[in-house]
Amino acid sequence: MAEQKRDYYEVLGVNKGVSDEELKKAYRKMAKQYHPDLHPGDKEAEAKFKECNEAYAVLSDADKRRAYDQFGHAGVDGQGFSGFNGTAVDLGDIFGSFFGGAFGGGGRRNNGPQRGADLKYNMSLDFMEAAFGVDKTITINKEDICGVCKGSGAAAGSNPETCPTCRGSGRIQQQTQTLFGMTMVTRDCPACNGRGTVIKNPCPNCRGRGRAVIRKELKVHIPAGVDTGDMLPISGEGEPGTRGGPYGTLYIQFRVKPHPILQRQGNNTYCEVPITFTQAALGADVNVVTIDGEQTVHVKEGTQPGDTLTLRGKGIPFKNRAGVRGDHTVRFIIEVPVKLTDDQKNKLRSFDSTLTEKNYQKRGSFFDRVKSMFGK
Image (cartoon, rainbow, N blue to C red; front, side):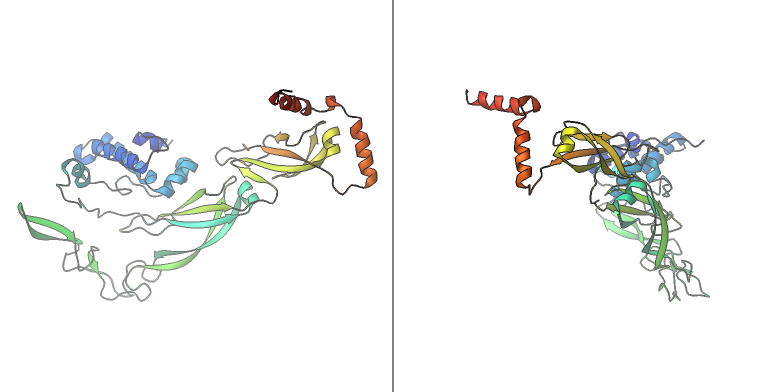
């Protein structure tokens, strides 16, 4: 059985609502403590460094952090984190915080595989699609490996050649005079822009870049219970990485359209139902709307304006709790009849004359409070 991952906030020793600055501070502290260059051969320190590196790679990115907060590790797993390549840390950066940058600003260059860029797609959903989930087909435009040259950047029948300036390393060294004497400075090779290869005969489709914009269709399953602002990660559907690095992630962000009758707050739904004076006074069975369709409920005798009735488990499904749903609350609105005939008015007056204070729940106490205010 695979070892269960620790909570990323726990890994960095911070709370869920931590600010970006505090998060970075906590990460730097952990990185300094466990960096493998400070603990040669210590496998435990290396594992802890990879763990905090992976945690910071997620929590320092607003989109990934939102997905993690909503879906847990399932929202970010499989995105190609590899400890050292997710968010590279070097001793120049870490020790620089102690010695005021005495090691220079750049630190060491990460020449290893780099994960590709993430993408975002905005999707509108109907109220019921968000409530119960739906399968959608979307079309995205994205940069991908060139299908003609297969990413080499070279035209058919040719290949990239080793850069004669840096001899394939992608870096060159130069001597620079400083206050401390002559210093060797390493920088990207200007002839190949750090790639280590040059293309003399570029691919006509991508013009030597090795990448081209493509149009791609994706079938996506939207889980039940998503809400406006939620983000669904689709691993491997971002842009391709460099130097053999993995693809980035496509994040689908949702906007749920309003319903003509129902309202939603989290996983609970609400609606208002108009009833007549007679139904409120005598009680009645009425139909109300839920996400499952119409349902008959009983209005109890003596229902007052604004009284509510809650139907347990008739709300929105929870994303991470199979079979569990929120509640649906009905609020009754008593509608006063209008455009009465003279005969109806007379009958209503006759009926009203038969009522006493015992027939009302609030009138007596209200007028008693009014009298006490004015000393009557």
